Image 1 (tube, helix red, strand yellow):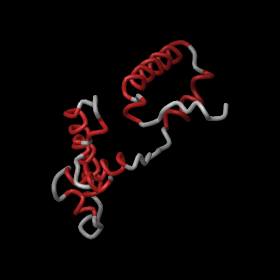
Image 2: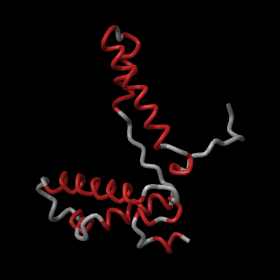
Image 3: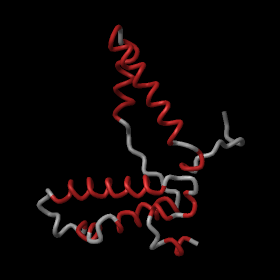
Image 4: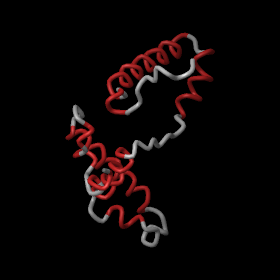
Length: 130
């Protein structure tokens, strides 16, 4: 059950088989460092409760991310790229059009490499309405 993994670090989760665990650990550590850096500058950092999240370095943050993964809870954030692309792609010409096309190609390659069914837990649903 879920309680088996409440103390599990993200990169140790069994369900992430095939994932580069060193990369996962480094990503969580970097994310925790960036989050902590953004909170430290706040006047209310010491009284906010966020201090506890970083007392063990990235371990508490890693456990929190692992719980989200084990519950398969998606944290969805609006991507500013989408709005930019909707505005610029239809009207882009010349170098801008070529640059946007290159960025879109690279983004697609990265998405195909990173966002796989095994990692996201999002599988094609044959019963879904079309």
